[in-house]
Image (cartoon, rainbow, N blue to C red; front, side, top):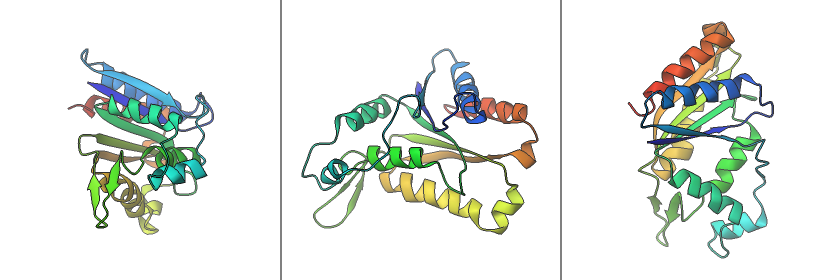
Length: 194
């Protein structure tokens, strides 16, 4: 089975990239499993939702070629893993732009003439890994933990029918060190196809 790991951080030596690599290592300890890490920054992905993207959303123009290529990578995957730092209590703009552009009407979901939504990604398990510096208690007190899960699991993936198998916030106060992040990521990687 094949996992597509999408990481969004501008520094290739960041903890986010290390966590993505540890996830891949955990996945590939099983000889039948493979993992591909997609570095959105290194690949120069353009997150800007353009007039062409809007026309594709309205089904009045074709989906841009760069987006068709991203969708093909997801179509080849048996699981999607997102790894990113928590910026301003959300995901980085680059990753949000990737979702905005890639999860298109007609591919991820379909809006019928009657106004119903057909969920088209029911076959895709998703694992969401956010890295944060605040404590779990701080996030819980201010409603961020619930909002994080609702925004991503429900607002994005449930809308498309994709099942969120894991939605994790790896937090520095609880984990205590970069090494603990990597240990947790390795464990999460082992569980992707469990």
